[in-house]
Amino acid sequence: MTAAPATPASHIRRIAVIALLVLGAIVLAGLVRSFVGTADYKTPAWAIWVHLATVVPALPLGAWLLWRQRKGDTAHRVGGRVWAMLMIVTAIDSFWIRTITGGIGPIHLFSVLTLVQVPRAIWFAKSGQIDRHLKTMRGVFFGLIAAGFFAMAPGRTLWALLFG
Image 1 (spheres, rainbow, N blue to C red):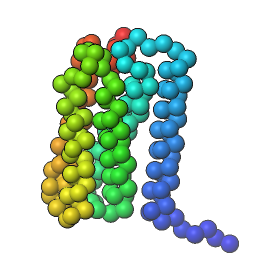
Image 2 (cartoon, one colour):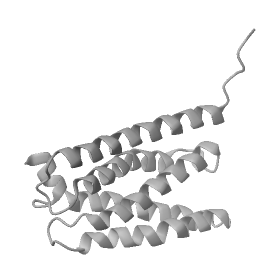
Image 3 (cartoon, one colour):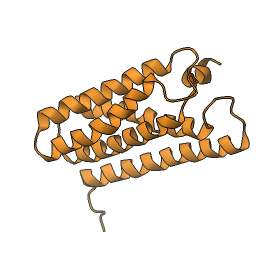
Image 4 (cartoon, rainbow, N blue to C red):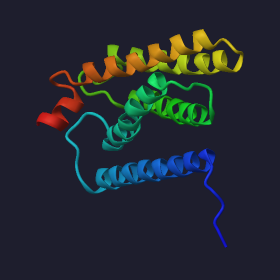
Protein backbone atom coordinates (compact mmCIF):
# COMPACT_ATOMS: atom_id res chain seq x y z
CA MET A 1 0.00 0.00 0.00
CA THR A 2 1.40 3.42 -0.93
CA ALA A 3 0.75 6.70 0.77
CA ALA A 4 -1.12 9.41 -1.08
CA PRO A 5 1.20 12.06 -2.51
CA ALA A 6 1.42 15.24 -0.48
CA THR A 7 -0.22 18.25 -2.07
CA PRO A 8 1.10 21.80 -1.84
CA ALA A 9 -1.91 22.71 0.29
CA SER A 10 -1.09 19.97 2.82
CA HIS A 11 2.50 21.23 3.05
CA ILE A 12 1.25 24.77 3.67
CA ARG A 13 -1.19 23.56 6.33
CA ARG A 14 1.59 21.59 8.04
CA ILE A 15 3.92 24.62 8.01
CA ALA A 16 1.16 26.90 9.31
CA VAL A 17 0.33 24.51 12.17
CA ILE A 18 4.01 24.17 13.13
CA ALA A 19 4.45 27.96 12.99
CA LEU A 20 1.40 28.51 15.20
CA LEU A 21 2.61 25.89 17.69
CA VAL A 22 6.03 27.53 17.89
CA LEU A 23 4.43 30.95 18.25
CA GLY A 24 2.15 29.62 20.99
CA ALA A 25 5.11 28.08 22.83
CA ILE A 26 7.02 31.38 22.70
CA VAL A 27 4.04 33.33 24.00
CA LEU A 28 3.35 30.75 26.73
CA ALA A 29 7.00 30.78 27.83
CA GLY A 30 6.93 34.57 27.97
CA LEU A 31 3.71 34.65 29.97
CA VAL A 32 5.05 32.10 32.46
CA ARG A 33 8.26 34.12 32.80
CA SER A 34 6.32 37.33 33.36
CA PHE A 35 4.44 35.79 36.28
CA VAL A 36 7.42 34.13 37.97
CA GLY A 37 10.03 36.84 37.29
CA THR A 38 10.09 40.53 37.68
CA ALA A 39 10.34 43.02 34.88
CA ASP A 40 11.95 46.41 35.33
CA TYR A 41 10.09 47.94 32.39
CA LYS A 42 7.18 50.32 32.51
CA THR A 43 5.20 47.80 30.52
CA PRO A 44 3.95 44.30 31.35
CA ALA A 45 6.44 41.58 30.40
CA TRP A 46 3.74 39.61 28.58
CA ALA A 47 3.25 42.53 26.17
CA ILE A 48 6.91 42.42 25.18
CA TRP A 49 6.79 38.68 24.62
CA VAL A 50 3.58 38.81 22.57
CA HIS A 51 5.03 41.68 20.55
CA LEU A 52 8.29 39.86 19.82
CA ALA A 53 6.47 36.58 19.12
CA THR A 54 4.43 38.30 16.41
CA VAL A 55 7.03 40.68 14.98
CA VAL A 56 9.87 38.18 14.61
CA PRO A 57 7.99 35.81 12.26
CA ALA A 58 6.20 38.70 10.49
CA LEU A 59 9.45 40.16 9.19
CA PRO A 60 10.71 37.19 7.13
CA LEU A 61 7.18 36.10 6.19
CA GLY A 62 6.35 39.58 4.88
CA ALA A 63 9.59 39.72 2.91
CA TRP A 64 8.88 36.32 1.39
CA LEU A 65 5.34 37.31 0.42
CA LEU A 66 6.42 40.57 -1.19
CA TRP A 67 9.38 39.31 -3.16
CA ARG A 68 8.32 35.86 -4.30
CA GLN A 69 7.44 35.57 -7.97
CA ARG A 70 4.07 33.85 -7.69
CA LYS A 71 1.26 35.89 -6.23
CA GLY A 72 -2.35 34.93 -5.55
CA ASP A 73 -1.74 31.19 -5.21
CA THR A 74 -2.62 29.16 -2.11
CA ALA A 75 0.75 29.74 -0.46
CA HIS A 76 0.40 33.50 -0.94
CA ARG A 77 -3.15 33.59 0.41
CA VAL A 78 -2.40 31.43 3.48
CA GLY A 79 0.88 33.24 4.18
CA GLY A 80 -0.86 36.57 3.72
CA ARG A 81 -3.59 35.68 6.20
CA VAL A 82 -1.00 34.60 8.75
CA TRP A 83 1.03 37.77 8.14
CA ALA A 84 -2.05 40.00 8.43
CA MET A 85 -3.01 38.31 11.71
CA LEU A 86 0.53 38.73 13.06
CA MET A 87 0.53 42.42 12.14
CA ILE A 88 -2.90 43.09 13.69
CA VAL A 89 -1.91 41.36 16.95
CA THR A 90 1.40 43.26 16.93
CA ALA A 91 -0.37 46.59 16.45
CA ILE A 92 -2.94 45.96 19.18
CA ASP A 93 -0.32 44.65 21.60
CA SER A 94 1.91 47.68 21.05
CA PHE A 95 -0.48 49.89 23.00
CA TRP A 96 0.60 48.11 26.21
CA ILE A 97 4.26 48.94 25.49
CA ARG A 98 4.98 52.37 26.98
CA THR A 99 8.63 52.46 27.94
CA ILE A 100 9.95 55.94 27.19
CA THR A 101 6.95 58.18 27.63
CA GLY A 102 4.93 56.11 30.09
CA GLY A 103 2.05 56.54 27.66
CA ILE A 104 1.29 56.33 23.99
CA GLY A 105 4.19 57.77 21.98
CA PRO A 106 4.90 58.75 18.37
CA ILE A 107 5.98 55.20 17.48
CA HIS A 108 2.38 54.11 18.09
CA LEU A 109 1.39 55.93 14.90
CA PHE A 110 2.73 52.84 13.09
CA SER A 111 0.23 50.75 15.05
CA VAL A 112 -2.69 52.96 14.11
CA LEU A 113 -1.62 52.92 10.45
CA THR A 114 -1.33 49.14 10.54
CA LEU A 115 -4.82 48.77 12.02
CA VAL A 116 -6.19 50.93 9.19
CA GLN A 117 -4.07 49.76 6.26
CA VAL A 118 -4.12 45.96 6.69
CA PRO A 119 -7.94 45.70 6.39
CA ARG A 120 -7.83 48.14 3.44
CA ALA A 121 -5.19 46.02 1.70
CA ILE A 122 -7.27 42.88 2.21
CA TRP A 123 -10.30 44.64 0.78
CA PHE A 124 -8.22 45.78 -2.23
CA ALA A 125 -7.16 42.18 -2.91
CA LYS A 126 -10.70 40.83 -2.58
CA SER A 127 -12.09 43.52 -4.87
CA GLY A 128 -9.48 42.87 -7.56
CA GLN A 129 -7.47 46.07 -7.00
CA ILE A 130 -4.19 44.15 -6.93
CA ASP A 131 -1.96 47.17 -7.61
CA ARG A 132 -3.40 49.04 -4.62
CA HIS A 133 -3.16 45.86 -2.52
CA LEU A 134 0.54 45.52 -3.35
CA LYS A 135 1.32 49.18 -2.66
CA THR A 136 -0.55 49.13 0.66
CA MET A 137 1.10 45.90 1.82
CA ARG A 138 4.52 47.26 0.87
CA GLY A 139 3.78 50.35 2.93
CA VAL A 140 2.79 48.28 5.96
CA PHE A 141 5.88 46.06 5.58
CA PHE A 142 8.24 49.03 5.37
CA GLY A 143 6.38 50.57 8.33
CA LEU A 144 7.23 47.37 10.25
CA ILE A 145 10.89 47.86 9.38
CA ALA A 146 10.78 51.56 10.35
CA ALA A 147 9.07 50.81 13.67
CA GLY A 148 11.73 48.17 14.38
CA PHE A 149 14.43 50.73 13.63
CA PHE A 150 12.90 53.25 16.04
CA ALA A 151 12.37 50.50 18.64
CA MET A 152 16.15 50.04 18.70
CA ALA A 153 16.71 53.60 19.99
CA PRO A 154 18.55 53.90 23.33
CA GLY A 155 16.09 53.92 26.19
CA ARG A 156 13.52 51.79 24.38
CA THR A 157 12.60 48.32 25.64
CA LEU A 158 14.25 46.45 22.76
CA TRP A 159 17.49 48.36 23.32
CA ALA A 160 17.39 47.42 27.01
CA LEU A 161 16.66 43.77 26.24
CA LEU A 162 19.53 43.48 23.76
CA PHE A 163 22.17 45.74 25.28
CA GLY A 164 21.24 45.92 28.97
